[in-house]
Amino acid sequence: MPHQVGEHNAMKFRIGDQIDQDHCVALQDEFLRCRDTFDEFKRLAAVAISAGQDPWRSYKTRHAYSTFIQHLYEFMRGAHAREALETRITNKRLTQSERSKLDEAYISHHAQRLLTNRRTAIQNGTAPIWENDISYYPERVPREFAQTFRNFRNNHSHVTHERSKLNVADFYERYHKYLLLLLQDARWWNPRESELSA
Image (cartoon, rainbow, N blue to C red):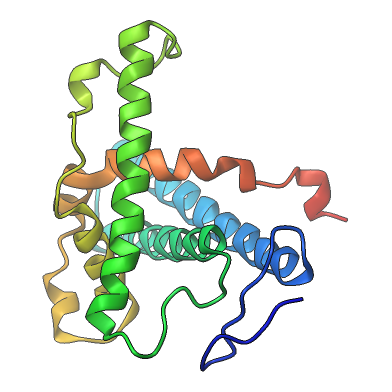
């Protein structure tokens, strides 16, 4: 039986109980939002490559990618909560900075595990034929990756003067490969299309 653990209706739960089932529905929904905005970004980027950029097309492409980042970050926070088996993985006694550090540590650890697995598959010859060369993947996820990921998401999500400083192209160049690792790992949250139309 779940029980309250603090303010804001934080609840402990167990895999398979009703809270977990509801949490999984929310995680699947967030994954779909993430996938859909990423697909929209790819579509717009392909149009920009073939038809050329203009201010409106550039805005739409940047917005789709930024929204993808927002949904992926939220999905990762939800996955973190499920792994911790607590609807609110941090309590009110912690500062915002301390709560952010917990999310960042989870994301960094998860990305590093995926990166190491990808490199190992390439080295062992078990990676798919279409996989990138190992030189594409450094040994370590950049130390600042998770914090930059969070800051980008925050600045995209809130009206702040710092939003004008977002450099989507720079973020893409530096960190896109790590976002792809996280997105590809989450793909099992994708329901069958027949389930969506039911």
